[in-house]
Length: 332
Ligand SMILES: NC(=O)c1ccc[n+]([C@@H]2O[C@H](COP(=O)([O-])OP(=O)(O)OC[C@H]3O[C@@H](n4cnc5c(N)ncnc54)[C@H](OP(=O)(O)O)[C@@H]3O)[C@@H](O)[C@H]2O)c1
Image 1 (spheres, helix red, strand yellow):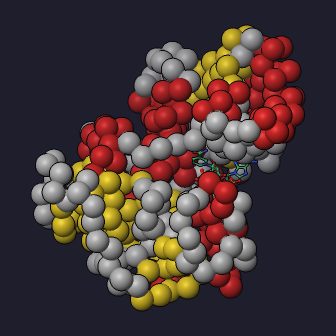
Image 2 (image 1 turned 45 degrees about the horizontal axis):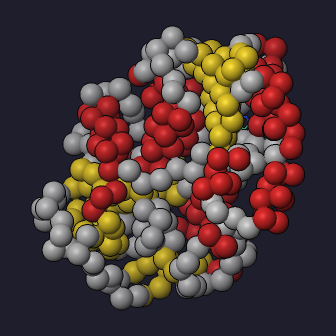
């Protein structure tokens, strides 16, 4: 089968190749998905750069990609909740999805929303799961106020819609060109970061979603109420997450030094801070499919590429200006 493989870590232009590889076989607890579409995430760029190589057990070369939609063409002996031909979607971090087929653990696969194309469905898994997991961790409820940075990004655009579906008041930041588009997603107050300073507008919110990091993570504590929550996707590793990582003494010491400024901010605001590391989740994906079918969540596709144009798609996402999601069509 055809697959986009990473041959070496480093420069994406040199190391991403369209290859002919063996079609995957499945384990008892897996399904084989014939891929119709996949989508690109900044995660793919971080993986290719080698920044996450210490967390990966997969030897090079390997197939890239995490988001998939397609049809089930084979089912493992222990899988009882799917049948051949089911149209599904998933986020997976074991085998790559920039390919014609992928084997996925059935317990992270869901039926795709019935009212979407494969391209639309493939745009959802990583970003919608992240959005759902962020709001769950922050225990967002009706009437709460939330600041969602980068509202025009993949994660931001989904989190706005899920937060609105929960009945929250949503502030979001974006650049001038995207203001109207983000308003249409339902945000209550869109802040144009080119002309406005969000720190003078947002006060005492219950929660901040920080997908930007660095100064944005620290400054989030200035706009939350006392006892508020900051959930970051890219900030320093929090104490609880570090504990779960079972790191050695020196690694822990290093992480605790890295988060020293955040630790001071947590104390100052009696705040909750967490670095979220999203995971595949069948139940949440099924709930998202229901919300899409009910018209409560819309998909947002910026650009569609073919499998052989994947490098171009990755470069496009790497520019950091994506409005919604970038999708790869594998089969029409
Ligand atoms: N920890 C996790 O589990 C996890 C999960 C998902 C994502 N992430 C990370 O979270 C980050 C965001 O992911 P994504 O998929 O949403 O990325 P993305 O779609 O590539 O984000 C692009 C968007 O960011 C906006 N943006 C950039 N700088 C901004 C700024 N200073 N203020 C406001 N908006 C800004 C851009 O809008 P303008 O063009 O208007 O500036 C653009 O629409 C990535 O680093 C990703 O790796 C982590």
